Length: 331
Image 1 (cartoon, rainbow, N blue to C red):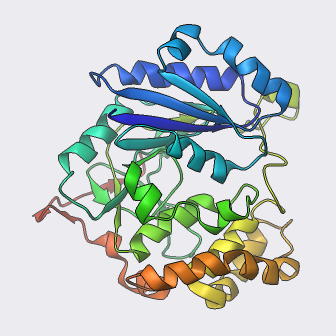
Image 2 (tube, rainbow, N blue to C red):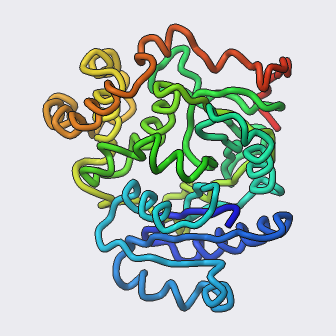
């Protein structure tokens, strides 16, 4: 099996079907060995409908496989999907996206072409939004002014980058054995928020690299700025795990950089997530992160502060060849 696309699904039906068909269309340039692994943690009524709406032929030939998780948590669902996947590579997508033209092919080609580079952690296609012009597609998060990352740019050429969320590709065994997955966030089945930053920064601290792949963006469907929710029809990830939403950012700060990183980002976290009572969750976040912090401190090759100081993603040399990469805010 060449590639497994993993999807965590919570209460998506129509958008999930659109996503699945979009993926299957983009499997076609890849000759064989492609599958979609869905781990569903929807409400029971939604889960019971899934096998009725996914085309039966794809279920029978196992192009699409569905697993059930009986509690809501994005992080454990993605890990479960990876555990049940069979591909050499794993591509992570949300359950409400349109796949860009040749995006999957380009990601797989990048990994194949660089199979001898054991330092590659994640490789990213850019992301765009259905309600925005394609010039707003982005590859990464810029950490110059904010450690939590502001949206950066899209790259025209293969280029090292900081981190972002899906769509990403990695070696299945890298995620399972070398990265330690979502770590504390999955260990405690935490609510949505913080997971992208967490798994995005860890590769750098462990001696790996994240790369941007120039290709068509993955187009995110929603959220939609419409007052009438019945019109918007966007799945909101409410009740998505244990604890308040976005507590994962605070936990991740502790794991990645200790209380110093928590303190430096206290104000920024408060501005971004005003519902998150940081003082009330401070000690809880430390307890949740202590196991993974111990593991990361043992295995890291650099500290988070050193990462900010050295900015290794600014070195765009790839396979000993200077690509003289240029960046753009648009594709």
